[in-house]
Every structure is written in C-alpha cells, then in structure tokens.
Image (cartoon, rainbow, N blue to C red; front, side, top):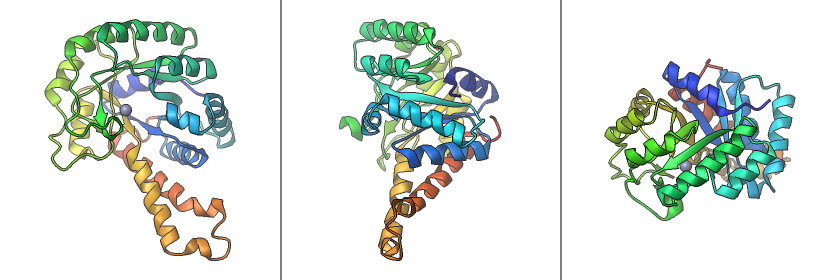
Length: 287
Ligand SMILES: [Zn+2]
C-alpha cells in the first residue's frame, strides 16, 4: 500500500539520512526502482512529472500500475507516489487519483499567490492523508532554459510557506535540474542553513541531485535535507546501457529485438544507479 511521504521523511530527518525520489517514465523504470528499494530495504519515493504522467496516459494509469506492482512484487518497504513539480490543477487531480504525495510548485507565482494556492492544496491533501511539498525560489536548469547557478530562495519567504503546514520544502540553494556545468559554483550552504533555521524543522528537499558531489550531499543532509530528487542520472544510465546493447549488435542476434530483451540492460543499469544513490543517501536498511 502506498504511504504518504511525511512519516518516512521525518524519520530520515531524525536519523540524518535522506530518502531518494526517483522519477518514473514507464513500467521498466517503476519495476527497477521498486525492486531495488525492496532489495536495499530502503524507503523510496516514486516521482512523476506531469509530462511523464501524460506520457503514461494519465494519473489513473500510474496509480493502477504502481499499486499493482506493490502487490505483484511483494513490496513491503514504504513507498510514496509523488507528483513532481505539479501545477495547481495537476496537484488536485493527483490527490483525487490516488497519489500519496504531491508537490505544488508555485515558485513562479508571486509569493502571496503561491501561499494562497499552497494552502488550498494542503486542505484538499489533508482530507486524504496525502503529503505536500512546496517550493520557494525556482530551481533552474535546462528545462527552463536557465543555465547557471540556479536561483537562491529567500529565507523569509521560506518561513511563510513552511508555516502553512506543508510536509516538506524545496528551496533553491544553487541546485539545478539536468547536468551541472563545469563552472557551477556549488550548493549555497549558508542559504540552506538559514532555510533550515526558519522552517520549523520540516524536512527539506534537494532537487537536481544528479552530479552533486558526495561530500556536498552529506553536508546538505546534515543541514536538514531529507529528500533528494534524482532523475537525469537514471536517464543517462538507462540510455548508455541501451546504446551499448545496440552498438554491440545484440538486437540483431536471435530474438534480441524482443522489447523485454532490448530494455533489460537499461533496466539493470537503473537498478545499479538507484542502489548507489540509496547507499550515498544513507537510506539502505532504513525501511
Ligand atoms: Zn525539481
């Protein structure tokens, strides 16, 4: 059964480790992440962007697939199904569809509008025991056409949003989506420390986890980060393994073109990546 992300993240914060959010795109990705979490005895958060949900034909399909797999794979570790960077209507739709957690990304609204909309999402989510993540200070990256340090959150705005009763807060601290440019100045730990101070002890979320050096990850966890989002790294691992298979001509040998064979190397590479991240975040054995 899916659980909200609230309890697993409070436990992580107390235990000084982080739970990984791994984004899913299809059946193979979901299976790889769930099987790895179970093997590692780690709690896990399955992230679904609005675009990925659309690709999978809708929120209902995602909920059905994940719930089916929890049963058929005998998954007993805590699993949350979480909308990643949801718009207002998307977040409400996911709460209705059976997601156990949602992110409402109102960072592009003026702060007062972000607050009003976040409040409404919290109210609807509370009725169903769904956890809520909010964001302050837009996290940059290739997706937004922004290349550079990434925006820094205003701690005063973080304090306002955190006080609304959200379960986790994403604050921009120089992190960005996608791969980091070589001249990236790194995470701003002064901002992170201030955000942690004013956010009333709620778990903090680090987006753009791909390519952040291990020691920065550890330091971020020590400053209250309890959820780390990983997406690009799984995509790169999946693509590289698939490329290797095809370049070796294996799809042309026997029935190597069978999608179950064709997608297997990518599936296995993802499992390795997810395991590495769980080890780095310290969530192995914490289920
Ligand atoms: Zn993000």
